[in-house]
Length: 205
Ligand SMILES: [Zn+2]
Ligand SMILES: [Zn+2]
Image 1 (cartoon, rainbow, N blue to C red):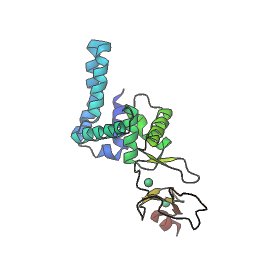
Image 2: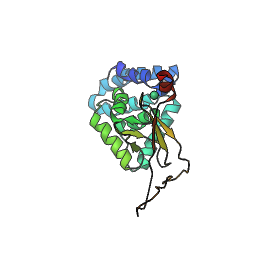
Image 3: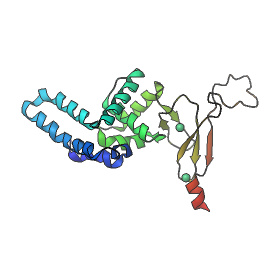
Image 4: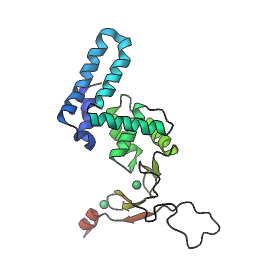
């Protein structure tokens, strides 16, 4: 791992950028520390070095708490905690309604062996476990978000594509009833409001 690999997420990630300068400095130092730990003992030292890098990447107390929190959420859903699952979860936390490609773009600099397939797997495992909600606005890639179980809906901008949450007025599914249910037992109503966001509406005038 190069120092560049470690520094990249700080530049890209709003959450990382909010870290203290001390935290950032410690993070940049981590690969050196790991290499030093690795050098003398060889293979036996490798797991420790990996742990050191893992620990250092959550260098600030807030970062460590967040990681522990993420790990607990993943474990709580009955899934094994892996680096790639943690990274994917954190990426969704900082950018909701993200496509698998967008999540991959965020996590790739943080992972030693990034793969789009492992991002897909993590997202689908999360969705199947109820940790993550999939939404599929027409003509858009599948999008993923952590906000689950509240039956919220979405506003989608036809100009820039931004997706925004809107609270469900009723708060539980189904919040809308069809004029005729035709004998169906309706479980949910997923509403997508299409239109222009404020910025696109303003620039279209
Ligand atoms: Zn827009
Ligand atoms: Zn949403």
